[in-house]
Amino acid sequence: MSTEHPAEAEAPPVEPPSAPTRRAFIATTTAAGGGAVVGGVVAGPPVHAAEDAVAAEVPPGSRVSLTVNGVRRTVTIDNRTSLLDLLREHFGLTGSKKGCNAGACGACTVLVDGRRVNSCLTLAVRLEGAEVTTIEGLAKGDRLHPLQQAFIDQDAFQCGFCTPGQIVSGVGCIQEGHTGSAAEIREWMSGNLCRCGCYVKIERAVEQAAGRK
Ligand code: FES
Ligand code: FES
Image 1 (cartoon, rainbow, N blue to C red):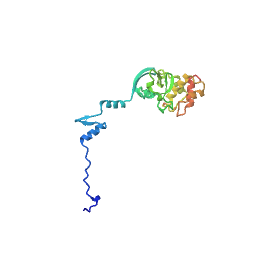
Image 2: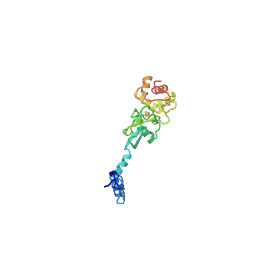
Image 3: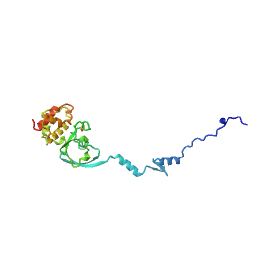
Image 4: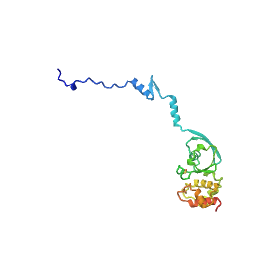
């Protein structure tokens, strides 16, 4: 009769976990969708999948034709391009300024088909056939637009950063007929901010160009 306690009986040897075979590794990798070595050839993802990945990295673009300051232009651009970036980065028209890039300051104001818009909030691809006027398009050769001259006469700027947007917006304000009084001008120019605080002189310049002075 054995005196050995059952718990102390010699346990059978434990087999160490076997390392995966090369064949099993390849099968697992292939099933996971990655590249694998098959018959000595490195196999990547299917060709159409690679093409899809490249297509996903290329942002969708569109061709658009518009007239800027009297010049017809046709470009192919990323669909997300703002009119402001199209003007500044594609056409080199840097007069329109990027202040807030969020529709809050008016520094980017241009005219589209005669209407004032914040070009930072306007998608360029939506402007097929449009007529765009920027600050660069107001003067006729050496002859300044009357509102540009009025800004000089009234000393209506300090640092000048807001000035292109103020002048284009003022041109729109005059064309719209919102110049019946100083208060009306202030109201209809209120979307254009001036951190230098030149508002009184800006309003006088608009009055002068509108023929009220
Ligand atoms: Fe467009 Fe400020 S930059 S509104
Ligand atoms: Fe400086 Fe208007 S002149 S922000």
